[in-house]
Image (tube, rainbow, N blue to C red; front, side, top):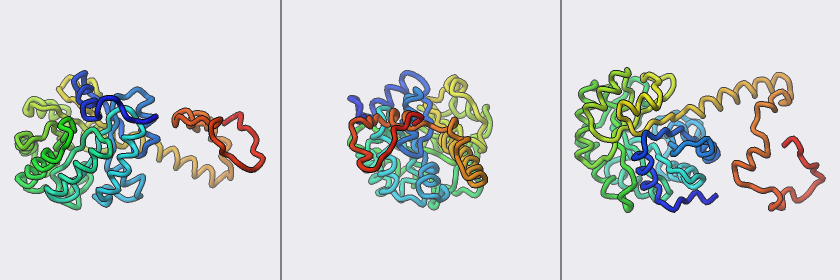
Amino acid sequence: MSGRAAVKPGRALRREMERGCVAMPGAFNAGIARLVERAGFRAVYVSGAGLANAAGGVPDIGLLGLSEVAQLAGYVARAVRIPAVVDADTGFGGAKDAARAVERLETAGLAGLHIEDQVFPKRCGHLGGKELVPAPEMVRKIRAAVRARSDKDFLIIARTDARAVEGFDAAVERARLYLDAGAEAIFPEALETAAEFRKFAKQVRSPLMANMTEFGRSPLLSVRQLESMGYRMVIFPMTAFRVAMKAAEKCLKDLHRRGTQRGWQPRMQTRAELYDLLDYDPAQSHWPARGDRRKETSK
């Protein structure tokens, strides 16, 4: 699989948004991204928290730099044919840094990104203690990001964390400023009720992204509900990560206790299933090249 569609990623994403609300599960690596695509989703989301937690083993406080994010997100974008949107945190610095982030991430094959208006070091959007940059500073980042695109279809999404810091009305006001600056979609983080999601969509007329992360401030609304309110993108940034981590935790505890993984085999992805997912044909490979390995019928 080349991962390269005939249509550029940004254009492909925009076409999907024209068709209806786009659900984007989060992928913390390229293998998960392939599962997202195989499950039938029309786009995939690369979560900053997912990359930090899975690749770095660190919390989501901006500890991964642009080079790391571009490399890891690029693996995801190139592994699938569906468009991928990436979390670019605060833009990795000021306006010039945000512009460079657009250049790097567009080159890496992403369809778009979102930049948020928190100060650095940022915090998870659903935790307390967040601080915002002044709105004019965020406006400068957005303008620089928009100018930096070589592909005008590369989607620039402005995320505002104002709801939890300055209140709902401030979030609406900032969203409108960001749209005036050139952002093409708005991501209102940590809205607290279904009524707020509905009200925001009525007051901010633009493509909107909703975050359906678990254990946060927002209610878990369905894609259908959000689409009826006017949202065009819905992300599930950590769903697969949380499920995978919980299953791995249970498996490893059981392995430590019993000294064997046999009881877990029915719950595993088989070798054959993995190879199929990766488009890998062992018959075309020279591996394993040595040893007397028996053919694995159970995979």
